[in-house]
Length: 155
Image 1 (cartoon, rainbow, N blue to C red):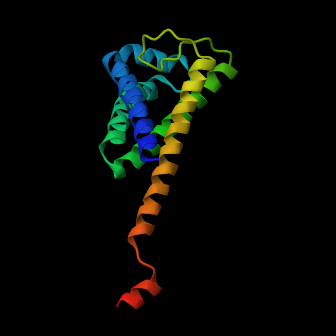
Image 2 (image 1 turned 180 degrees about the horizontal axis):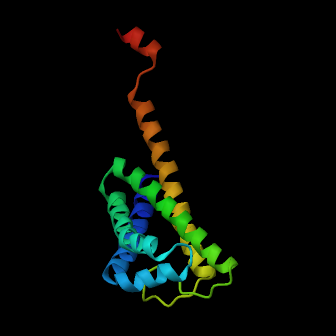
Image 3 (image 1 turned 180 degrees about the vertical axis):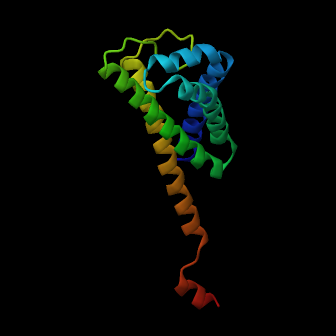
């Protein structure tokens, strides 16, 4: 299970770092992509476009550092996946034919099945990492603690 979690963390981290870096390197193009979703006004869009790329990068790095930061990074990744999925569903429901903006502002990939799948995978990967990491931590703690009856016999 450790190997699976490591591979999942690594893959998610690479995707988030790459996505965040491409957005950070083209901030005005990403701002345009945020505005095209028509979910927030210009002032909030500027804040989103300024913060989101760096949040993705920090989240990706957190997934690579250690056990404690992995869980935090996975929670954030899952939340990002949920927001990305929701924003795309909202745009599709309102009939907007816009580019995803998922990987940098210059990405011309339209919102559709593939972009929704990618956002859903980010959400599911984040959730899977949280669940599997917590299960592994509980198992580790249980293995390191002795049963009260065993402690009484040993003492």
